[in-house]
Image 1 (cartoon, rainbow, N blue to C red):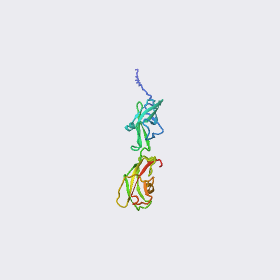
Image 2: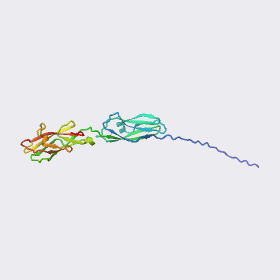
Image 3: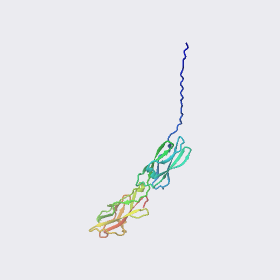
Length: 245
């Protein structure tokens, strides 16, 4: 008797998909993610630029990534060559270092077909000497005994300036100059009876009676007082920054 053996053959179709290294996010090619700009930079000026690439040669688009960025700069694509894109930041509004943070963080969104990345940039705002000094503690009026010793410090004037560095360094003088930007009157009475403050023209001899230290604002007596000869003085103190008197 013959034995018949049946073999079952089952075949499978296996599909192998070889995927390319696609769908990779864009990258930024920049040595520094920070820059400096003076607070008086003109609006519309180019203040920073960087390069971005896409490894899959996708088209890149650029936009601002935060409301703070949108209020300060315009984000603009400058050029492209192959898969290298150059983007620029243009100043949108006038900067003010004295009344706002001196370091601002900007966010730029870079997007290809599938991915979106955020590039963080730090804008460092440099100060400009754009504020005049302001005297404090006004009005300046004080009294002296007529026997006050010579070289005695009799009064101190004080001014403030929000600028930094040399632009905020204040000097004082009793003489006007082209660099003086602000002045205040000073009335001095010599005590030997009732005191009366009288507005008058600057005394011609105040420089012979008083001296003023330019970097401290301290006024010293340099000549002996005599109530019977002169009972009050009137002169101005000037403040300025940077330029010498």
